[in-house]
Amino acid sequence: MVLLFCITGMPGSGKSVISETAKSLGMKVVVMGDIIREEAEARGIKKTPASLGELMLSLRKEEGNDIVAKRCLSKISGAKFAVIEGVRSLEELNYFKRNAKVVLLAVHASPNTRFQRLLKRGRPDDPKDLKTFEERDMRELHVGIGSVIALADKVFINEGTIEELIKSVREFFEREIRGGQSVSPG
Image 1 (cartoon, rainbow, N blue to C red):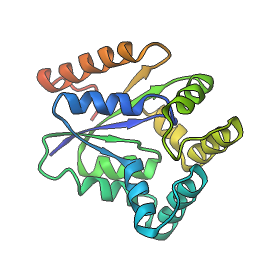
Image 2 (cartoon, rainbow, N blue to C red):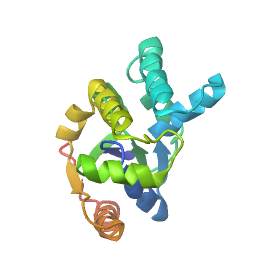
Image 3 (cartoon, rainbow, N blue to C red):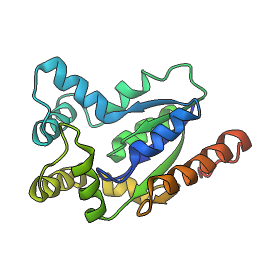
Image 4 (spheres, rainbow, N blue to C red):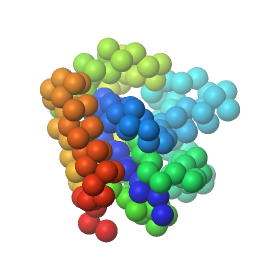
């Protein structure tokens, strides 16, 4: 059974730093947001924060709250270790737990820190103003991300430099993978 490191956190908290660090260690990484962006592309939907948020909600309504999780898991078959970036709901988390050994990682940063990072990041679907940022946060919280964050096996606080987070994450993964000592309660 695959050991799955599921990453959760609000937009701009540092999830991609964790997944990129995992990738640098040779781990397979699947980004849940990419599933939504791929679906938007397939449907010819412009990638804005609002349109992707609406698509995320409509996909869950059409095909179930664990639809994105199902699509992610199909991309990691055969891997011994894998990372899923962007778990947002208890349904997604529970789907992964039914199909893999899961270690849930949360990354936290303050709203101001996250907003500043998103302004600098510049992905097409990143908010350009505080109102859009707050609306996106509320959509994420509505889906249930707060409950997922609360259940994390390990929490990384990301208010410092990117180098500090990378160092902490690298040490964590090296301990988990090489030492086999999982922080997972299961």
